[in-house]
Length: 402
Image 1 (cartoon, rainbow, N blue to C red):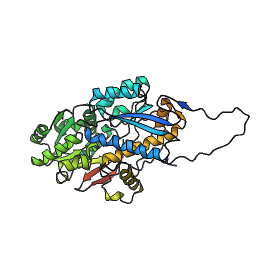
Image 2 (image 1 turned 180 degrees about the horizontal axis):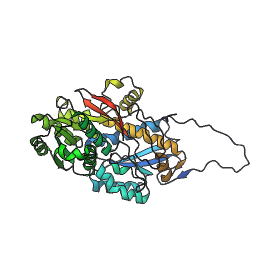
Image 3 (image 1 turned 180 degrees about the vertical axis):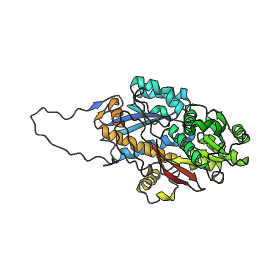
């Protein structure tokens, strides 16, 4: 049977034994008690990645809802969400504060590839779970070397390979220009895309340009790619720069097949700032239900999401898929904590995170289930191609697995 997000039915057996027989022992590490589970995260509430700040706000609101409903196994979840300004050195400072001063049980959904890289060795040395990091870099699925780190969203390299496969099947004579962020985030997508193209990569790719997350604009990079003669634009950028790229390409008259990664498909954070009319025809991928897609108007999971947003995060934009992302990741964590029971040690948190079986999260597309094991730290491994039609993202093709 598939796992669900409802509390499991527990058969309570009362044993009438001799006096002195104790109930199962409760086990706690720092951050856990009879009444509280304290967890921490870093989010870019300021800086160039601030479009993602709404993830943290969604999750703080989600656990407020959970706590009002009685918490998890009788304990309230206290999520400390700190600003790192999308700056890895600041991430290091904030994570140290969360671990050493606030004494959180574990970290959850820290955002950013370079940012998580900056604290990965520290958290693993401290044996503090770095759970469901908010980045799809392939390195988060390496339990042999980093047993305290686990991702959540589909691996970037898998997504990159999928776009390459799509091109080889539908536009084999493509001339591809690539824009990527000059860090592990951008390079991971680049590797997957080139691996997917195989020996054709050197012929198909006609230009590669990068940008720094601290750059004010990428206009010059877009002009350079246009001049290369590329008729396909593989755009590996975070929302701020993705919006700039869409707008600049359109305004200069460049009309390539524009492939954009699924971290930058938000209507509110990317397409509307760029111009919805300028975004028509974009191709990307999805693993979450798009709240703007009429397909889900009667879907219970999305109805529950909208109800949650109205009550607990009314200032947030319910049409922003970034909020669906934060909501889905929080739902996954709830299941892990339920499975932990009264053993709230850091070791058991990781043990349960690595023991998710056919978990159906209502925020995910039908057919996508979360599975993990001690040797598989990639919770979500299926995605589907999508195309923006001017109103919403329309899925096409089949679900593709890693």
